[in-house]
Image (tube, rainbow over all chains, first blue to last red; front, side, top):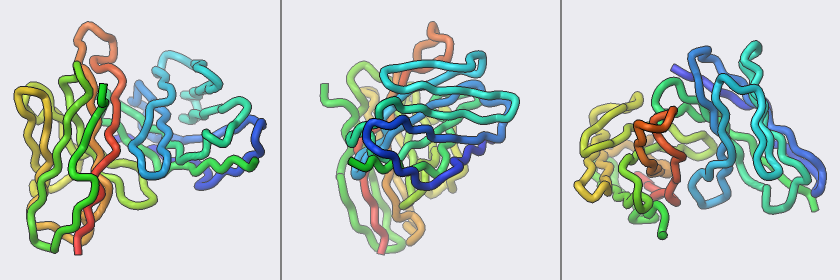
Amino acid sequence: GESVGLHLPTLSVQEGDNSIINCAYSNSASDYFIWYKQESGKGPQFIIDIRSNMDKRQGQRVTVLLNKTVKHLSLQIAATQPGDSAVYFCAGDSGGYQKVTFGTGTKLQVIP
Amino acid sequence: DAGVTQSPTHLIKTRGQQVTLRCSPKSGHDTVSWYQQALGQGPQFIFQYYEEEERQRGNFPDRFSGHQFPNYSSELNVNALLLGDSALYLCASSLTDWGWAQGQTEAFFGQGTRLTVV
């Protein structure tokens, strides 16, 4: 099965700075990765995804990088805003889109 | 569009009891997955329903069962509740589209049901 983990439980950044959240995975067969944002009291919200045949994908203020050699992916948030404060999860899937394995999560705290 | 709705939002049960949680998927979605999220942890996949059948299952005991109805809504049942079953139970819906490379479209999560077993 898939096992994903996050490097830091908490990340504090200044408003306006860029944030980088890292994630490691163990299953080389994973072909699809997703980043979710979960605010307090809410369910996870899809941010961005990337397939294993890609190295980079960009969205609005977010970029996901995938390094298959070291089994690592990262989420970059540009110009971090207070509304970005949440717990971020990376999730990996090795064959069934929703049968994903989530990591523990990184709590992003934005300092005004 | 109301998105994914779950009921109830909060629930307190006694150890040994049984519980049923409900989920209505986002309009147009035909696939429902259930997750258990313990405090401070990431969601853990329980199972997925498509065409009223369990299609995939995670590492959860048979005490956890489910059902999907013709209107695509779903129920999660947990029997013989344990204290360790206390968690946030999340429902996610998506559309299974065999014409799409990954097979399923983006999943949308509900707000969850907070189950406390005492």
